[in-house]
Length: 175
Image (tube, rainbow, N blue to C red; front, side, top):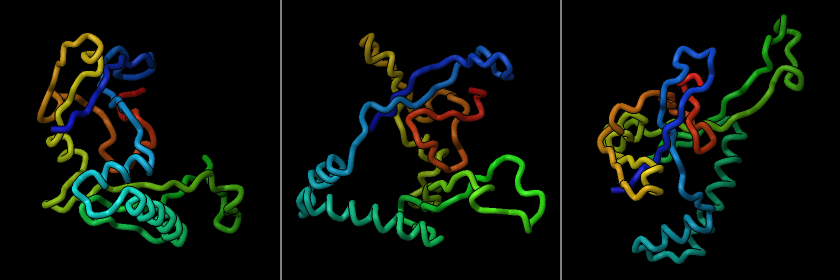
């Protein structure tokens, strides 16, 4: 079974309701670029070479961005759906007529919603059930502490289906 590494961090925000409490944060051990992912895919008994897989992934990336910029959602069966959201500047426009894209829009985000069909459900709660968790600190100590089937009560996290964009999940933990 694949392993999800985590580290424990204490909430140090003294204005938070959960100040001083401890929370698990995911710990990535490597970032695979497109070339490494293509190599990995080609090593799974694929008839396609690493270069062919790389080409398909590159074309996928460019077409994904193109479709998103045309206000289309892109659903990858068994994985999930990519879509865009807009972030507005705080305060908004006082009147509809005064709204200005250059002034009032702050950012355009790419979001991801995991597949939730029963057969291939990788929503956060179902994904949690499929993972084995290892405290990253145990790698250094050689302890090998493992927790399976839900991580032993880890709370918080991003359950909204959007990617946070980084290796750490800053969620409702107050941090």
